[in-house]
Length: 373
Figure 1 (cartoon, rainbow, N blue to C red):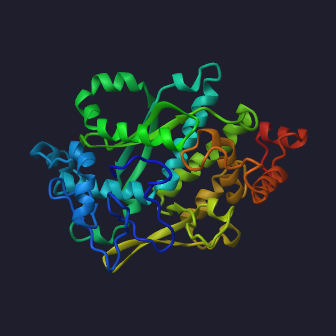
Figure 2 (figure 1 turned 30 degrees about the vertical axis):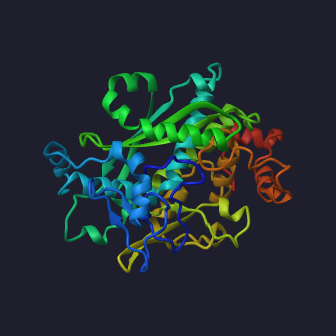
Figure 3 (figure 1 turned 180 degrees about the vertical axis):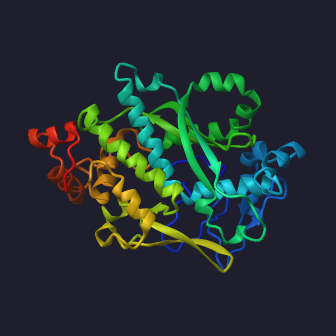
C-alpha cells in the first residue's frame, strides 16, 4: 500500500473482514463493494474514481507497468506478469501483517540489546526481509491458495540506510513522496518522534521487485523491563512463533471488534483465510488462547511445542509486547502505563505472576533456561 504505515492507516483486518482494501480509504472488498485495479500498474486497487484521483500524487512515483525484463524475472515462479506477482506479495504482507510487525519490533529490540552503548538513532535503520515463493503460480490452482501462504520468510538483516540510498538512487527516489508524507504524519501523531524514519524492505531475491514500509523512530518513554538475557530468551521464542505462523499457514490476527475490551484485543490468535464471494476473509480457529486444545491443528501444535521457555502463548505474546513497547510498531509505547487505565493490570499482573522480574528464583530459572509450566 502507498499510504504512510502508522496505526491510523494500517490495513488491519479482524475476523470476517475482507483482505483486499481500497488503497486510499481502506474500504474492504465485499459483495457490495467492487475494487478496481489501477490501469497503469494493475497492482493497487480502489473503490472509486475519487479515491484513485486523491491517491494519484502518492502512487504516481511507484506506478509502472512491468517491463519484459521484470515479467521474465517473475516468470521463473510461473507468474504471467510483474503486476500479478506484486499483488500476490501485497496480499501476503497484508495477510500476515501482525506477525511481520511483531518480527520488526523484536528485531529492533534485539538490535538495541546487542548494542547497548550505541544510541538507538545511530544504529542501522534499514531492515530487509528476504522472502521465498512457496509454490509455483498456476492459473488453475492460484485462486484456491491462501494469500497468507504464497510466500515465506527466510531471514531479516539490518543495513545502513544511507549507504542503501546512495547505491539504489532510482529506487530510493521513487519512495520520496511516501517518505515525506510519512514524516509529516509522524510529526503530528507521535510527540516522541525524533524526525528519523525506520525503513523496512521486503524482497524475493532475483525478482527485482521491492515493497517498502516506513515507521517512526521515537525517544523511549521508559526503561526496558528485565535484563538482556531475560529478554533474549523470550524474544527469540516469540520470533520463532511468529515466523512459523507465517510459513506454516496460521496467520495471527487480533480481534478488532469494538465490543471486545482490552486486553483481549492485544492477544493475536491464529486463523485461516477462506474464500467466499470472490473475497478472501480471515477466520479465527480459536476464540482465544484459553480455548487452545492440542491435537486439533498439527502445525500450530508444532509451533507451540517449539517454544523453549514453555510459556503459555497468551503470556508469551503479552510479555513480548510489554518488553518491546518502547520500540514497537505493533502497539503505542505507552500502552502499559499504569495511568492509562486500571484494566491494564489485567495484562501486567498475569505476566508478573508468571515471571516476577524481582524474584530471584524466577530470575534464576530464566537465566538458566529451565523449562517450567
